[in-house]
Amino acid sequence: MNTNRLFLTCLLMISVVFSQGMFDSYDVPEYEYRTFQLSGSDLFNSITVGDNSMTRMNVGADYMSKYQSPGYNLSYGLNFVNNSMSVSTDGDDFDESEWNMNLPFSVDKYFNDTKGMFGFADGEYLSFGGEAYDDVDDTADLPLTVGAGYGRIVSAKPVAQAYAIADALGIDADDDTIAAIAAVIGSEASYESIYKDDATQQYYNDLAEASGVNGSAMQIQKVLTSPAYNISDRFTGWDVRAGITNNYIQCDDCDLQGTMTIEANYAMPVEMDSQVLVNFIYTMDRNDTDEPVNMPDGITGLFMGAFPDMFSGDDDDYYDDDYYDDDYYDDGYLSGGYALGGWTTMNLNGSYTKDHSYNWSSSATLNYASETYEVPSGMDNNGDMTTTTLENSGMVLTLSTTYSILNQLSVTGSYTYGSVDGDSYDDQDPISQIKTSVTYWVF
Image (tube, rainbow, N blue to C red; front, side, top):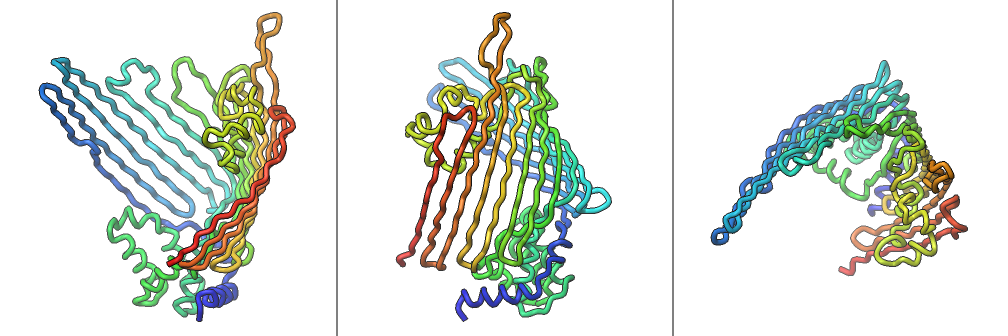
């Protein structure tokens, strides 16, 4: 039986036993681990040339703790680096030291049900010091996002992989066996931290134990690594969330209020071979309209991501003359530069992916972005600043398909269309791009 027929047979059998109920009932697996490392990229490095010398010392520490369960996730860590340097040149001595420390943390808590109401916080404490920063007043930051929401998006790919394993092993697995296999697959990220060099061996042994088939570790590894059993990402569920992001340790003269974000996500597997994803994000700056603030890339970021060849190198034909309005772009208002407080952005993203067979997949993606913000435009007769409100929107559509023959040929073709409109653009023409790439193994 050739590889293609094997996959199609496997896919047909999976489709018979696969149920949407397993998608909906699958939760993230529970595991816990801690790691601690000491390091020194230049623990001691001394160079001497005659009477001149330079000595460098470096020591660092990394700690991470992670706990994951269906209803509660917590991770926190510590990263610390201390550098020192001593230089002696012609009798003159120079010593300097610096240290950097950051403490990342993240928590998600579901209340009552693992797919219902939840709260979340994600942040990082940053601090630095030493002789190199003697003249710096603001030596600490605390960027933090706090919010709440309802619902949940769960990656259900482990469930599909579990069915593929059961089919390859020839077992008529019940829901409990599928859930046990999927739980091991879902916790794969923890194995390296827990088992170190034995992680791969332990992972596949645990999968064999969960399947109930002794001596099947190597066959399971083939299922999870061979393209003949390749299964694309699968997500299921929906959620809505809102959060406030700000730096809660600022300089003495700073009083920035950060941003508020509202987000909605929807994911639906379509049978066994397709996936629909929809994402909506609305962000509003919370500062006063007379406060200069940072602004995200917005439309510029959307198009730079979709057409990177047009915005790289020294080719200014597209970059300056044919696409962006120089007056606004050069001032930095369209490239993550400064605007006045109160700006808003909206992003709507949708995608559809389909696996035609193990070696042929296609996708369609639509990205839409809009932005509204104010920029200084001059002074009135009383010497007060006047402003101009700018509104822009952009859309990018991408169609892509990839076909491959194992160890022989791989072909990818894509079509991308983008259009932009708004106050910062002067009758800009749409952009379209057709792109292909081919790899052929001669021998």
